[in-house]
Image (cartoon, rainbow over all chains, first blue to last red; front, side):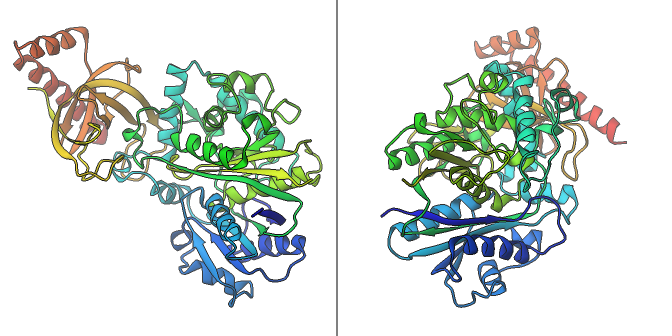
Length: 374
Length: 142
């Protein structure tokens, strides 16, 4: 069965005083409005940790009731930072199997009201407990991965930094982005060291926000051509290598197999650049760029808005922002807008787009392929 | 003697992990205990400048590939002179494992020990490195 995207919506990402249920209601109502629907058959909610971030439990029912959908079957999906993509995956299965005809997927997170160390600690709980006991945080592991890339694979700090420069430049054209100011290469290279060699401007911000899409088995402007999930060990030390994420490769292979085409058909993509080096790793793991070429391609402008293969036209996690469970859905929102000519100021041309989301430290990743309906 | 680090081995795929795990991460198989020499090579490292609560900044963390095959996460008192590929000794200070750099002489001694001679020297070197690290941390703390 063909599964299509009927409508999308999202809130601006950044810092807000609005409540998480309100943010999610805003995104959901925009998506339902765009789809021309009042009520879906079912709802899948994505939040990574509302219990700790906002102190609310039973969150599927909480959000559904808040939106006036107390009688619509709702469940919650969680795979750490890829929860939004996981919710799309689950909704795809629900529609493709014939269980439901129209499913609303809505994801969101609210974190900026908490102190940064507290937020880091809560996000860090998605890592291996032993590694955490040594003070390892997400930035620490990303720093170690950066060093491995730079030592063993000839990636330079300029190449890594150019990812952030490019994504900030894209976000400057996106009214929904957390950061809308361009940054220079020197500013990125000169920003303070977070986890040597990783700088502050290589790391995504802490953002609030929500995003939603409506999936249907009926006619739709964009169809989901393929979905794939890939997993890996919770502990980074249990992996044979650090410079490639097996979970991304597995997710991409599954999605391309379902779609019946390969990475050469992808016109543009949204990838999970929680840390700038992760964008370079993703391009090679997915097969969008030959091994060892992602840094050079980025520095040469191939992945810029006017390049051969635009990556993160929204600004990515780095500059659009990263409200955890909203992110995987916001990527698909951006790609839907791009494929249907609604991305004014940053409009791309193309038929096929790819979204890539990382859960935890690449323990539970998703790749989603979208194709404009003919 | 060199510090012995407790790990475990998968009887099916022979992967070794440290600290020990009940099940192999790659197979639903119970692992068997295995001890690994506390000597290995730096795979990568970082100095974290905004460590979590309870840790001093900068916090030096490394992934070390032990000679027995397992990769191990540990702390370092410093990263001066440490590079990817550096040979290091691992020693427990309290309940926490630290890496310390092994010079050419130390490496030679470990080699001799493996060939069956003068092993006690290595113990002395590793202990002194560990103590030095511990003392330095203590100085910084007070």
